[in-house]
Image 1 (cartoon, rainbow, N blue to C red):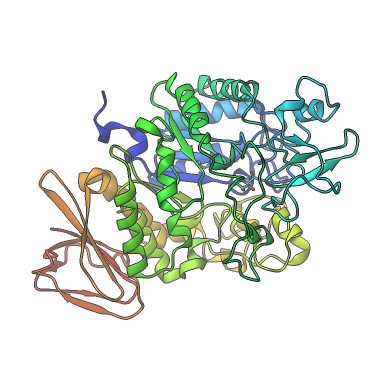
Image 2 (tube, rainbow, N blue to C red):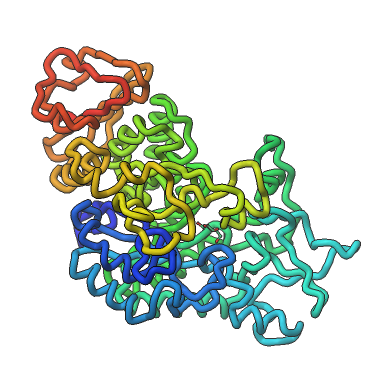
Length: 531
Ligand code: NOJ
């Protein structure tokens, strides 16, 4: 039995790559697998341990790969299977783990399973998807709404029934109550695990099972105008059903057929519901993604409370995790501002639990304004004008100051912001005090210091904009002091246990300074102190 600190997905730092936007190698304006291989040295210098790739499978790209037409292939846009195999070998040779996106809740409407399913009412795959008679008035069977706008039911005139799709009409939901569907996806998992893939991030895992009776969802009494229309109803019957945990336990058993793999679940639920996804006897997801930092008010007291609530809710033996950004949410540098983005990095990389960050966050990439004619995201197209668009966080990686930021020799599928000429990897690598240098320093310290990797989290009482905590293990401890405000803060350091040596400031200019009696922080500064 491995000690917990030897388990790679507990101490490793996870990095999400959105393949369309990382590096284009064949000048078509879209990133690809060869491009990722070319950039592995950058990732090695950054110091991350595991790469999660958003989908690279054959897809009509209605939802940019989250609409899969073949679960065991590679879309030609990204390369060939040989390229993927090369990526696996090169990544493993460089010491990286590789996580793939598994999208089992829905397929593309072009997937042969769905083509067959919609072909007739009595074909063998009819029950692989969720078909329903119209309501008495001929309308949709119930009031469930698609997350991307409109009803989540689409009428199929040829067979006079509706099919269910939690997202686009081009993304019909599979029927996970059908054992044949489960077995088919288990075989997909085995296919990739057999190729050496180190695990999966499972898309919308809390959606897999729907209410057996398809009861109407209740209205959301807290709905606010300006929010996406699907929030008008709660998802009481369409997501987070009790039977989903057995489905996840089955997936976990497939994962456990192979050594040392990880199962990560994408779950947007309140913390007390989220932790159920570790499963009974922890036989569920190893890491149910914790997105609390993506939506919290960015204040010391709110974050302190989230950490406390999460730590308290974790079942015995469950390993925590924290996520700072992804391809669905506004960039952290825009959510919290460029100055606090450094504090956010120190927070993420010093909390207890596996950290995940999103490509480009390490160079402070911000949300990019997308002109109406360049909008690509179907969510924005269906629900325009209220700011739901996800293109702004999916723009090309800013590698250097050359045309298209060194991302591509052709016009990229999404624009780069004007400031890429300064804010790019080459420039920031040359700057010893850049946010990129901060990320590297944080990752290096996390690797070096056992308290950061696996120590306990101990809150220290603080006030105002100051967030204070201690990480400790086996007689070693570090204290983290984060100023969430833009004004300087001073506190007496002796009584709070903060005396010691500064190991790192988010400004990268105070290393080896002693703290003795008073700790002074500048506005927007975080420090780590060896105590
Ligand atoms: C969650 C993914 O992260 C998102 O990008 C996608 O649109 C939906 N699932 C539907 O697959």
